[in-house]
Amino acid sequence: MFGRATLWIGIKLKMGTSPFEFLINTLKVALIFIMTVNIVPLLVWVERRGPAFMQNRLGPNRVGPLGLFQLLADAVKFIFKEEFIPENANRVLYFMAPGLCLLPAALTFAAVPLASPIHIGDYTFKIQIADINVGIVYIFAVASLGVYGILSAGWSSANKYSLMGALRASSQMISYELAMGLSIIGILLIYQSFSLNDMVLAQEGPLKFVWQGKEIIIPFLPNWGVWYQPVALILFMTAGFAETNRLPFDLPEGEAELVAGYHTEYGGFKFNIFFMAEYAHMITASALITTLFFGGYSLGFANTAQVTQFWAEHGQSAAGMLGISIADAATVLTSLTHLAAFSLKTGFWLFIYIWVRWTLPRFRYDQLMDLGWKTLLPWALANVVITTTIMFFAHVGN
Amino acid sequence: MAGLNIEDVLFYAFGAGTVLSAVLVVFFANPIYSALFLALAMSMLGALFFVLEAYFISVAQITVYAGAVMVLFVMVLMLFDLKNEGEDILKVSPLGLIKLLAVGLLCGFFIGTGWVASKIPGKVISETSMASDQQTAINKDVQPVDIGSTVSLSRQLFSKYVFAFEAVSILLLVAIVGSVALARSKGGTHHVSR
Image (tube, rainbow over all chains, first blue to last red; front, side, top):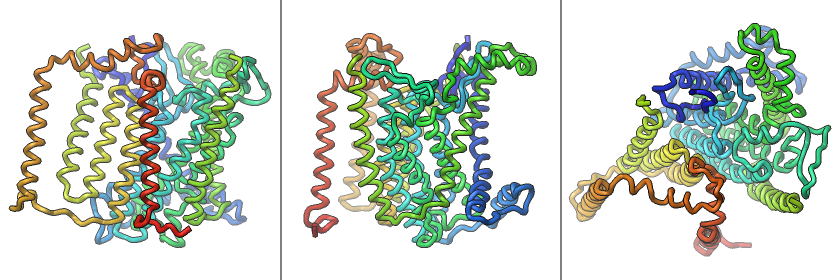
């Protein structure tokens, strides 16, 4: 009776009838959140050691192997730092702001599919917190709420630099949200869906499309969105840098002018939470680039059925170890393979984010606004018009 | 299946949250708190739509109202840094009397609506627009369960309601052009020097 039930956030299920589903969903939410938060220290390490390597210096290398324990030392430092609150601060908003920042950043990740579903017996486990049919719009909606955290932080600190940083951040995020939303219209037209799962499934296998009634297959390329929408990738990535407030668009915290922007007055763990929020935004942005343009968790050439077939032939030992049937074990192994593929792709884009930070100089404020409104927006609109025209002619023969 | 239905629990929780934050919008003297609570009320309304499985309406609600309109409000309020309007509502003045009257009228309106609503049999509300729309749906493959999906929504928008849809878009265009014209006119925020 639970068979093939939609297992997600708990809204769909009746608590009284199936505590098991409720438990699994709660565990999933906790696990994926903890995973996201725990990638942050690792990214910080990459952010310090990586550029040190690029700039021919060493970076933190004293604590533990490769300086990895530096992260633990930093965490301890963040927790035990003296708590400082500015005298004229609005205490309620001052304490709430870091949470208001982290919450939307963490919530956006809920709609991203991480791997193909696992089937065990009658159950289907989706490796995703919430399979929403408007997943991509949900992510944009929740991400747009992140501005409140930054605004409250800037205003409640009672510091002019904080307020200036917050105003810069919010105007920047509002401006680039528009370009970001428009840039993916082409992708939505091609996949004809808002659901991130549908998009991943549409990108499986070799490059294949229908042109005027004829099916064209290019076997040496994967069926990724980037081949259909290269302009959209550039627009989306650029807007992504602005939305996450990263260099070259980190004007909200431009240290030469604004000390540290909206989190000038924050220290210790509260500052750490702002840091986590920024990295959570970065992780979601990378995961979205992967899902929209680079096939999500899919393996490029082989579709899910082929991978499952492969593991059904080679996965006997794993099935024996888990004590489940070979067909079930194959779905588990397929899911793990897909999770690895997804992590690799997302990791690559995270590295690009860090790489760009240490490569490009910061924009000036008027240059930033010009780029958003006068360059990205017209290009995004042109992309929509051109995509619709091509889509129209592609379907002429049908 | 008499167990506690989590949908109902969430619906009433978000409903109570919406009403509470909407009430707090009025009761806070500090305009920034009022604006923040209005944003919260909008988000809660979005969550209510989500529980009712109208996902697209829910996220559109959050993007447009909480994510765009209210952000601008909060931004402007923080920039001006308005002082608290610590004015007593019962201050003896004609204005206070008008305020009191307005509150009384509003309360009467609420109670009256509640009384009228209780006289209407419950079935009528559930059988209005939604059901009739389904029966006249142009595409027969649209399932009744599908009413919240973007496919059925866009089919309705671009077939049955296409005139209203286009009329609204023209209205919005006029509003945009009008606001730009007002901002650029003499005495506006920018001097036309070029």
